[in-house]
Length: 173
Image 1 (cartoon, helix red, strand yellow):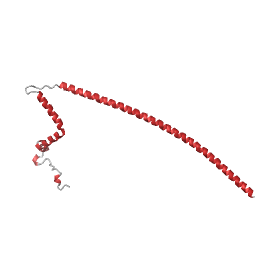
Image 2 (cartoon, rainbow, N blue to C red):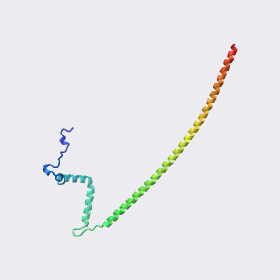
Image 3 (spheres, helix red, strand yellow):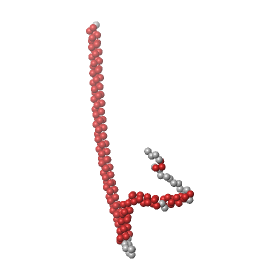
Image 4 (tube, rainbow, N blue to C red):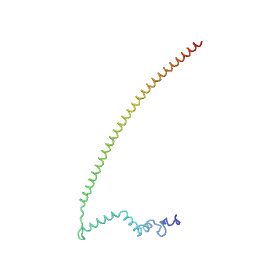
């Protein structure tokens, strides 16, 4: 728990006060651009984030200084730099094109496998549906035949009961 809020919140200074002459440009200049503490803070953050790049740039500039003497002007072959960089870009482009072509062929193969799987699954589904339909047709025929047998049996039982009751009535008279 913070007892004093001023410990956690940095003070904010408004621009345009009397000390700045009411000018935002002077305020920015006084507080950021011409402020040695602010410059040191920015430099420290830059070194933290990009220290390795800055070290390499320093090494490169040291090499240039070593290669050229004070009296002699160092000639830099820009054509060679351009040729090297264009060769690197062309090689990178070839590798990327190769990777994309390989990816494209893999995607085509995946599509073919997916299509083949879909066709096989569809074929299996049709076979299962046809088998189920045939089974249902045979079951319906079986049940129809059993129903006919049940009706026939019920009819025979009715006739037998009728005959027996009729015969029983005649014997009792």
